[in-house]
Image (cartoon, rainbow, N blue to C red):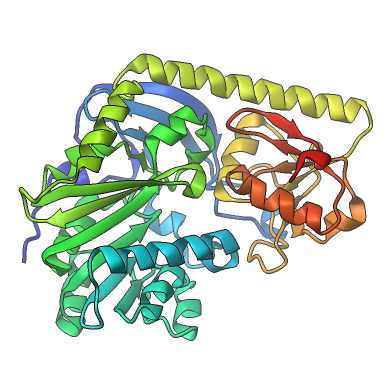
Length: 427
């Protein structure tokens, strides 16, 4: 069993001075968002009377590998506490998206009932249920209590963090995997080396690791500073992922772009060096260069657009209040915490955030700003003049659904560019 990996791929808790990916010191501060609480550590009513922990939140760019990172790491066991409130299965667009992802991977890699697919950070098993329907053997690994929802719905899940030791246990019990997936997990890990070597150990020869994460190009082009939070230790460009796996016995063999979380990248990484590389990889690297992901100027322009969006939003809120109109928030994704804390918007400006009736977040309060999270049924009673769509990456779906249900409010989309969408224009 291989267990050796570069020292810098174990990210220590606290301030980070080198690039997490390539260990370079050529780092540039792009955006200092101030001190923030953890975006998914929602507060109960009792906790409002206690002190709240906050940590530095800064966006840093590495000139060497073009990856973006934050420069302060909060310990993973604090971030992914057992009561972590996220369940992928409650978001309809996400369920459909993950089902189509499973089907496309089954087809691409000719997976059969003999093949094992392992999903790391498998949450409630939404992605794996797609593989299961496709007749493939499955196993989930999930560190939080959400694992019990997965097991209850027949998706075999181990409640644990994934590391080399865990990979050895799984291999003994279930054999090697043909495919290992992570969606929105691989940019979060402190233990990069443990994770990559664990994956290496568990994969068959020529087996493939699929990493799906936010994509730096979309973040920069879309002014999406709200994807910067303590869970997201890194935001990858394709070039930075290649730089990362060059340090291991792996080849980045294919890449796809998707529209999940405002734009994502799905990278196919095959076990072993010198594997055949798809033209998609070459094309996307060219596009990154053309878009200036290797130039500091691109990031300073991005920072300017973020500051402008903030001013536009705050000015609009002041205008609404002055005119005596009402405005509330819709949804409380992790990114809402970054946005509202950086903008300095609290409950005097947005009295509540309305969430789906089956959300685990109801009755809780937004970290930092303590805005209450309530059932979205309230929108139909209050009929606010404006609704700020904080899950703006699902904006179209949300606006259509609320309008169809009879809501007459106008909508505010905070990013990529601040805009107001009249109810009559929602088609």
